[in-house]
Structure formats: C-alpha cells, structure tokens
Image 1 (cartoon, rainbow, N blue to C red):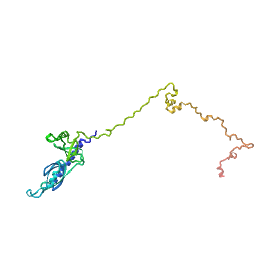
Image 2 (tube, rainbow, N blue to C red):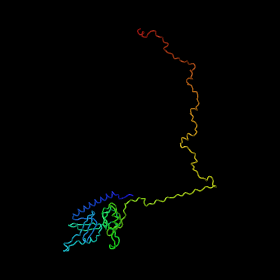
Image 3 (cartoon, rainbow, N blue to C red):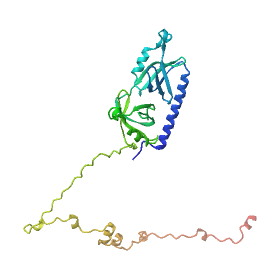
Image 4 (tube, rainbow, N blue to C red):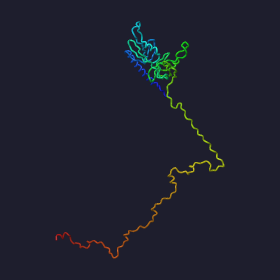
Length: 313
C-alpha cells in the first residue's frame, strides 16, 4: 500500500504553512497601524454592535460600526446599516471585512465567504478545537475553516448538545495525521460524519476486477475397437516411425555407401613405343658425296724461320 501522506513530507508542509500564516499575521498587524484595509478571517463571535474576527494568523480583532452624528444625547449613534449587517451575520463563517481605523477598528462592510459546494468531503489538518467547533486547514487551499459539530439529542434541557464523541476521536490523533469528514452547509459549515483514522492509499488497478472464468476443454473418450472392424481401422501410427533411421551426420552416410574405386584415367591409355627422331631416319641422297670439313691452313707450307727475320730483309 502506497501512502499519500508520508510523515516527513507532512511535517515539512505543516512548517511551510505555519510560516506562511506567521507572515500573514505580520502583514495584518502592519495593516492595523494603517488607516483602512481589508481582512479575511473566521467570524468567531458577535454582539449587538460588534464582531470579533480571527484572521488567518490566529489573531483576534474586534470591529465596531462607524459612528454617525454627534453624541448620543444629540441623536448620534452607530451606523444602523452596519448594525443590521451584524445581525444578519452567522458566527462560524469565513468573512471578508472592510475596515477603517480612527482610534477604533470600524466596520465598513463584511461579506460571507461561502463554500463552492453545499456539501462535500473535507481533507486537511486539525488546527484547534472547542466544545462546539473545530478549525481545520485544507491541504491545497491553505486557509483555515471552522466547522461546527452536529447537534445530537433534543433540547439542552433534555440532554441535547453538540456531538462530543467527534472530539474524543480527534483527540487521539497527532497534528500531522490528516482528518477526513463529510460536511454540509447549513447557515455555516457543519460536520456530518468523521471517518476513521487511516492513511489515504492508492488502490491498485486490479482491485475490484474479476478475471474471466477459464474455459474448460472436454475430451471425448476414444471409441473402443470391435472385432468386426478391419485391421486397417486400427490405431493410426505415427507416419514418421515408418521411416528408416538415418544417421545424424550426413558424412557418416557417405562413408557407409559402397563406391567404385576411383581409377586414374591415364592408366587406361595404351603404352606405345615412342617414335624415333624422324630426322635421324633421313638418309643422304644418292650420288651426293658428303663434304668433309678440313682445316684450310693444313695445306700451307710451314715457315722455316721467324717471320720477324723477314722484316729486316
């Protein structure tokens, strides 16, 4: 199971959100020293001529209507339109307050911020609680919202009151544990049902799916052979079994075959007596005498003396 709310990541988110709220509170405190401004928060309480709003930094501010006229003895009083506005506001809602400062925080106008939907499921973190309500913060929006506990029983005199069992269930959770509950908007956000403590998990895609049933293959029994049938109707044998076994190596098959010995083709040629040189068989033509090669110097007289002696003569 893969948790979407890892503990270190939750602590980091809480630190970041608290830092953001602190900066918001500093900004709002700075606005208090200004002459006028606009503030968002939770309407915590109200009276006939005042309202108290808790800003997003958990700071409480009291606003009163603007004064019209002079003193009360001279007909002066709070702005009647603002008095009627305060009477119509319902405690527990988020409001946007337009104010002005003249020594007191004066209420000019206030608008209720209603949820986008009339009901739903809230997932966030518990910030604070009382015997009548809980303040929680949405994970994505980052704004605190106040949800009142559901009323159980009859009148208070009959034992009716806010459901305290929800507070007991939430008291056993740490600040980093997310809370999840269903709610409805009835003049103000109200808790309907709180889910048990569990970690939100992703559901694997195969959960809730059904595998197709396996198909069963039925095999019919082979009919038994009777004596009236021919022998040819017997069991069909494997046709490959009728083949003669052959050696795996094709060269073994070549060595086992009877082959005629290879004869040298030149051995079949008839051996003939080589003919003599045809020029040796040629005879000298008849009547022709052979010339005898003689030295031409053999017929000359041999000189008796030195040839150099003849030079001087």
